[in-house]
Length: 456
Image (cartoon, rainbow, N blue to C red; front, side, top):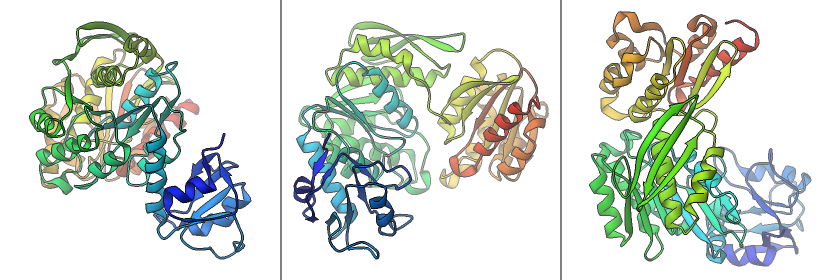
């Protein structure tokens, strides 16, 4: 299937096409490039122009470049532009313009990727679905997702993220969603925003890109819910709140043998569904997903049924059985809100001793120390038997815990990982969570290796 002809790509980017080529996909990585892809030579952590020869050797139909790289023939199939990132945005804009289906955009401090994947799975069987790959939600990830979108897509799920003020609105205007959902607003990236109210306003900027008479799906009962509602009202959106209150309401979420049996009411209609997880925060986001898909015109009953096929992504709360213990791998990211949710999941899982292995929560700003220390008083901590931790910030939580709950504290996650076999025992239920840069995922890897070696 042809995604872009040379002529179409040149028109979308304002570039000059060499050769009469056609691309069946768009790639920024020679490690995963497929024959027929248009290779986009972005200049980010590495200069993509250094890999154009490799991309063409691997079967790329053409390369999007700002100059002819060394070693590339002067008549090679290329699309030459002044600026590669701007050209990728042009491809994304053109991809969105020619698509006649519905676009759902998702942002939030916690749960963007898992919620995006949940929506994608829920739409199974309801047409041609296109969704962002992995966590492609930034200044190049959103245009790349749009550039990869087939023209006959029925539903597109676009994930939008941010690290600094002013990033979400331009990406939303590029995606032009019919429905925009915010999962939650929490203390993440506080270093850049100073206060949670600033984060809420940045998240609310997703509504600035909504199509006319678009829908805003917002979480109810947050301290900043009114800020989100004001942002949606300013954009002229139709607003639906979701959560334990609101038009989209989670009425029930009961744990049952490692699953959640849920009941929700969406605009007066009662829906039952099952999730393959015990994290109640996933149930709340599922209600938001159903509200968003209903607003996008999907069959919400069919979507609710399909939610049972969704599994949490690796590192984002998936529960797995290792030899002798149950592991909750939630090591991808952390802030106080998501850590509280992780501890609640740990508390809800029955079985043996409950053990939390925690890494530093990063980018929390000036209040990072009390935020770590105060997790000792989280309601679910009462049901946690032992807490191991790593990092200078987590030292403050370690010191605030009752002596009976204090496990091992180490300066680095690697030090904890080296002792993985000593941190847990057969029958334990174990949560591993921390910010990605804390490298607490090394403990997850060590636990898996220990299980393979029958060390428990």
